[in-house]
Length: 173
Ligand SMILES: CC(C)(COP(=O)(O)OP(=O)(O)OC[C@H]1O[C@@H](n2cnc3c(N)ncnc32)[C@H](O)[C@@H]1OP(=O)(O)O)[C@@H](O)C(=O)NCCC(=O)NCCS
Image 1 (cartoon, rainbow, N blue to C red):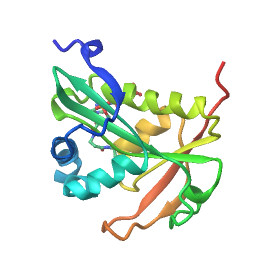
Image 2 (cartoon, rainbow, N blue to C red):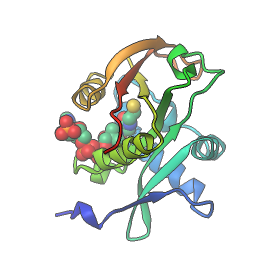
Image 3 (spheres, protein in one colour):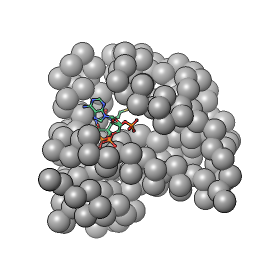
């Protein structure tokens, strides 16, 4: 039985291993990639992992010294093809993966909550994400977490269409 609280969630640090994080993402995204959807994170290289980690604010889940989960959150992107991501009051998250051995244990929700807390502290109005329009299970999970579809986008690097989902955050107590 895995005790989830033994896993530390902490900010990414410059001496964390990029190849270890790329390998984790490949493992994490292999399951949806094995279905009809082939997410970019299932095949991205270290340069992409590093750019995505460092462009945003990134968090890692660490267990016994091994990286077992990751998530990154980004400020508005004025050059994004997704109109919603260009809004000044929006942050969006991505590169969100948990080691398959730990999926379904609540770790993903904890990583997500770390990002939501971070955004609330920074008075972000809307937290958003994008996922494949056919990823029904993921879309339902995000709906349970309070997200609604607000936009559509077609990224150049993948062969499927995506939806943008967003959640209005409440001010911290
Ligand atoms: C998405 C992901 C990060 C979630 O992490 P996780 O540790 O598995 O998630 P949790 O255990 O915290 O569960 C999150 C929710 O999904 C549900 N869930 C988890 N595993 C599930 C499964 N196998 N089938 C159905 N629902 C499942 C949980 O019930 C939970 O729902 P709730 O929050 O409404 O109670 C993880 O599954 C993953 O890495 N998936 C592959 C990569 C990916 O798809 N990333 C997101 C791209 S947009």
